Image 1 (cartoon, helix red, strand yellow):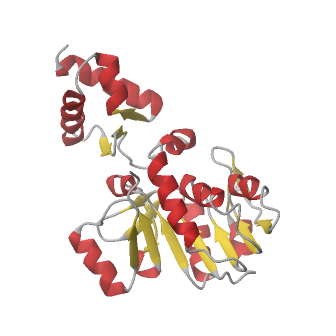
Image 2: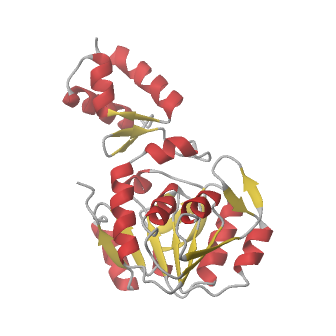
Length: 255
């Protein structure tokens, strides 16, 4: 089967599943991994897919891909990043965790931490940390976004304003070449900005696929982040900007 026949079916699989895997596509079409990598490179060059480690995703614009699909994207990288982040979170602090699959991964790494006060607008994080008896969990309230268990809006932001956190761990939908953190939901952006205002230190957890995507709403700059945990080095110009800003970069290879 030629690439002209494979490409439409690859795009159909991506539209159905939110992503495609090099290995699974090679098995599906009975071709080599290198052949599929060339197909994905061609589709990415045409703007029809965005390449990520191990496969590709639909290009991001104004609508995010589904939450379950995002959970399945780069799980090894997210786990490695979350473990490294959790290692730098001490016991006996107040902590905020926001919405996202990466912050959920961090929550799973905190199950043995002691004497934490965790505030979250992520119902999934609250359910995970319910398994740690040494962790007090406060949920912000707000408008429930059923697609991902997130709580957004003025009530969530107002609750956050009543605290001063020792540390916040946040995620984002996209990280652009200028070092801006981006998201899709303007209500979530407002909540994230409230988190940054009310936190003494902030960690960002973002795997390298966030640099291949775009989203329309700006949260903040990496200059406002103390430490970025990621799985691949930043491009040279952005790495230099972070050095100038004093933003620490922790690169955690997933393999």
